[in-house]
Length: 227
Ligand code: ZN
Figure 1 (cartoon, helix red, strand yellow):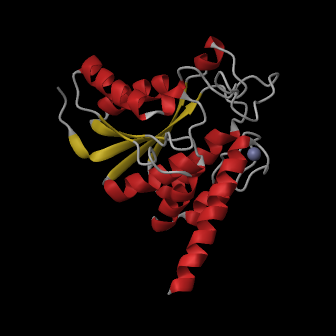
Figure 2 (figure 1 turned 90 degrees about the vertical axis):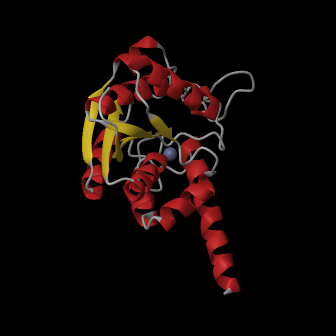
């Protein structure tokens, strides 16, 4: 077994609000941080460039991994330009923005990548509070996969999910406490229509992100009034 180095962490990094908050969270927790960005055939390849730029600014080691085979396995509206995105979660199934297997592939690949570099901490921005119907964002899946990848390689990986139980409002609060609220607000890309910062304003990702920000800023203002 390779020597375990607790001082290093690998962040699965998309360049969006959640994983950027996790990137800066990891920088507070670990001495050396690596960021791995997956190109999975997403319509907005700009995401990769956004991730590269922020990783560079954060001073972490960054690499892009091409996993575009994922988009060939199954149809979804994030990789297929001919499909219109679901605005809401259908009552009886997943929204068509669901990319089947995505987090399983990402984390499995991240673990192999981490092992090569003697890293045993892996950080991902998934969470189940603003549950949008993605089964691979749930805590049970992450815990199960953690056991599986440990068994697969006889290693002791720890998958960290700092956002698992917090909502978008609290995610903004976390970014603020890490001193990166403005960076996350202005430079990340969460929008399904590929618009950086505050985004297009009307896609489901923008609506969720904006409502969280408005709630957080309101709370912050109210809190200041008490002082
Ligand atoms: Zn948008």
